[in-house]
Length: 107
Image: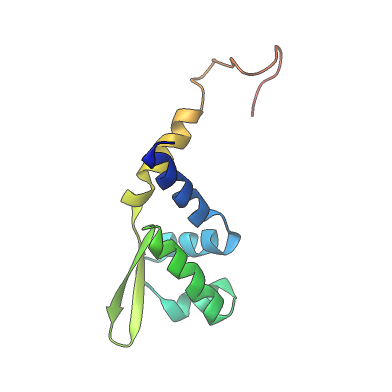
């Protein structure tokens, strides 16, 4: 297995939870979100949100900056580029349905 496969799998695993997707959507909509705001918006216990944030930070998907007694979180879009490129490479070119039975189309 190539090392980049491990990196892609780690990124995918970091995204593989609905609460983490909600956190990413929140950060996309409101850059510089404060940790407490994330807890309120996600609707989970503070300790649960902290664990989700820790996993996203460990994967490099977000970063946090200390601002006084609070931490401001932001997306790190560069971290997702390898995963985005891999997913894009999985899509067949338009009109090329080599893997589908005759007469079947994807939507």
